[in-house]
Image (cartoon, rainbow, N blue to C red):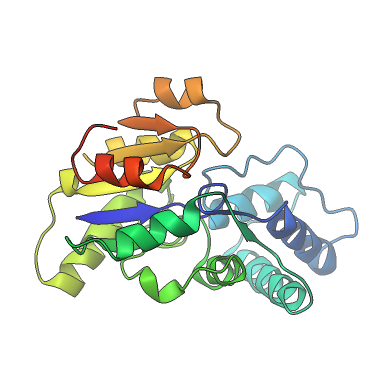
Length: 234
């Protein structure tokens, strides 16, 4: 089994610190009037978010401009993390990750996220998680396609699983845990299971309507959630 966790608003929250760091990178690089008004962040991939920001501000979304934004974002978040906590774990998240990592069936754990690796790792560490627990990951820039989409990432994770374990994994043995309808749709587009948690901006009803296999309010009921993950009714 492979359990893939989303990061933002699933495992942790940053109180928009990451978004502010992205905006400030744009202001430093391009214009003090650089705006992010109207950009949708939940479930989106960082390279797509940055490209949309650039277009919104009438800047060409070239590879060099996207890389400059990525570097500036990383520097801002790293600098901020040295002086304050930039993320906190959401209720139940630590217990669920620990329970999954220590389960007798030894499932592989990973991250499936729109975050870049360097900034996602800063958030994970700041919220008190050990990044080494997440061994099979698909990051926001891992899509092999010219037009990246979140639904490309489960295949990346399953390919990484094959490379590490030297065995193919049945998509039905892959569980994606996230807080947006995009987490659910990327799971379903790849034949995987989806556990949706209503700790983000999507409502419980919206997550149910998206086709998730299970929707829960939060991650606090560790034993019940693990029972469902491992095949018992919740």
